[in-house]
Length: 315
Image 1 (tube, rainbow, N blue to C red):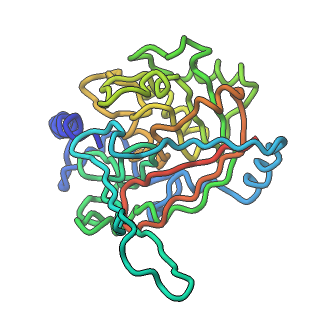
Image 2 (cartoon, rainbow, N blue to C red):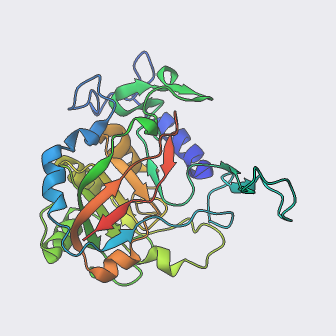
């Protein structure tokens, strides 16, 4: 993700680490995980049958909202990420149909980076000085043929309570670039929406950014978003995933430019909380902020770091 900026972040992190024999920063005690040293699912452990059953009671009207954007050749993305599709059928209608019923059809090949459009960041996406969630060293799970641990194909189905916080009601629409949401802003928005955020929830922020930039042909490198304090606060509440209608979820420029992507590190590496980027929240926000039934089945593509997704919100 965000390759050019990420490289600069890696250099900064490497320069500030307090090293032991493996070179990792152990000054903060961020591993082992509270879910156990062998855990590889992180906050997904907070999902439960009881939570799903309770969340299902939120479905009153049967109104369904798609939270995924269309991913295509023109979707703004960080280079060298790109998308392409090839349809394996002549477009002039030539070729011999099959059988007496003259059956014909199409097949296709999609050649794409997975970190384009609406996506979930798995726990193998970002780490701290070459260690990832639960302190797992990069050498233990990263291969060019795919991740041997933390692959998104291992994620269970998510069917739980979602909470939409409309930050355009807290600030303006769209929320200004560089605006961070932390505990005070999250609590105020939750109170306005009459919800109490808790264990097993998925929290989405609506900022109006996606709608405001829908005609952009290149990715804007700045954004409003979640701050580090807010990220840790939500992680401590036991949320499973946090998302927004922005490409990074977190505020950019960063709260501390010497600590790039610190929200990603706080959520993924330190707490095992998943990140949902480029969520299409406009229609859901127009219906009102607050609780809904959230559903997501992640594609079973073996060994992937991220996954292109289309979650559903149902009310």
